[in-house]
Amino acid sequence: MLTIGEYQLHSLKVQEFLFEGGPLPGRNLDPSKPLPKIRLATRLLLIVGRGRRILVDTGIGELCWTSRWAANATSPYRLREELGKVGLTPGDITDLVFTHLHSDHVGGAFQCGGDRLVPVFPYAQVIVQEENYRTACRPEERERLSYNETIIDEFRQLSLFHTISGTQEIFPGIDVIISNGHTRAQQLVRVTDGNTTLLHGADLIPTTAHYPASRVTGNDIDARTVIEEKAAILEEAYRHGWILFFGHDPFRHAATVLQRPTGFVPGPAPEF
Image 1 (cartoon, helix red, strand yellow):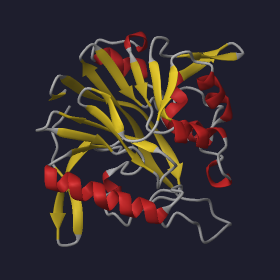
Image 2: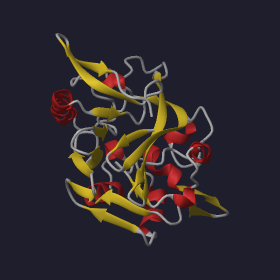
Image 3: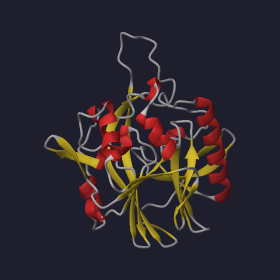
């Protein structure tokens, strides 16, 4: 557990999966051979305090028919086990904050219930960026496989689903920063008490392998914007000693930022 101000932060490793199109070059030059796959994990950030139990993203989940993400899962979905370690159940979660609505970040919000989907977190309000929601409803061709129409339709029907617009504080000491390179209006969740700051890197900085600002992934919609955004985040994190949380790193849940002659590299971070 990491304490920042009035909040206790927990890292929940709920799933592992394989993914095509990691750090570039992700393009296969020989079409007769399968694309290489990289090993990734799904780590959820749980923030507890001030009467809230906030979960950032939900991972792929158990809906193996919903997307290419779930088809590549290499472990069961361990949400309930991970929540149980901190004495919680899905019904205890008060808020779901989604960095963006790609299937590997939202599939775990639902489970199969006969011929329909049932919310896993029945009492949680859902917070997403308005522009990202509009993008998910009408994705361009490059992102069509990343957004799942069935899941997006289910979100529309949730009474506690609501959207926000732009960089803003969503709870005392917790705000979101907008990033547009990976997908439109991805929101990076930041927790700070003025002394200690943790930033969820979402899919802008999903693993330690993505630290070089020039290292983009095969499914980023705008590589130039990713490079610019990442360079600015890494510089600020280095100057102010931020902790970066990784939603997809199979080996490390967090790191700080150190500067070397070759550029920024991962530094030590507290366990939590």
